[in-house]
Image (tube, rainbow, N blue to C red; front, side, top):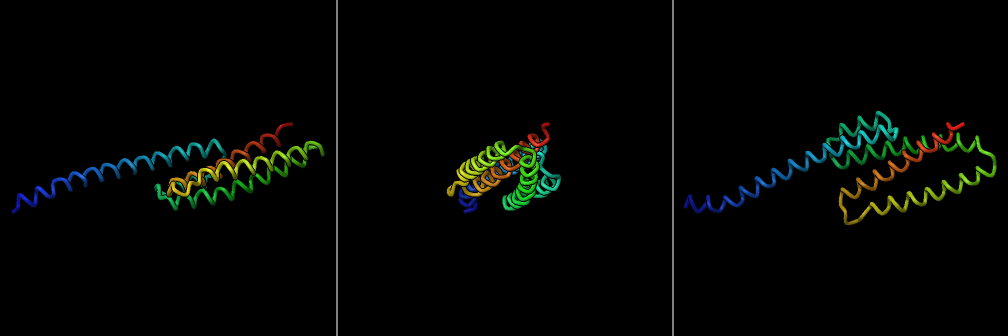
Length: 151
């Protein structure tokens, strides 16, 4: 009887071991993902608050998304500030061109990042969509800052 029980448990023990290994790999990948995001954050001129928040998230999806949403608000304020600074320096014809370019950029950003929000993609799609919006806004804020700083 005891050997029958062990025979029944043997496949389950293998599955348990495989599951433990798989979970370990997923945890390592999430830590790596956070580290990569932190290096991208510096290049994109993200705030220290964002890097700190991501570090504290420990790869927990909702925590990462909350960090991204807070940073998106900060980057959007930065984008608007740089946009206003740039547009104040331009002659009327160039102002009109910038307004048109900004409207086209918003349309592209919304369509592009909306594509990432695959309803069947689960939590990974939500993270990717939020990250897309954040990165697009941060990149545009940096671009507008560089244009405004150009003599």
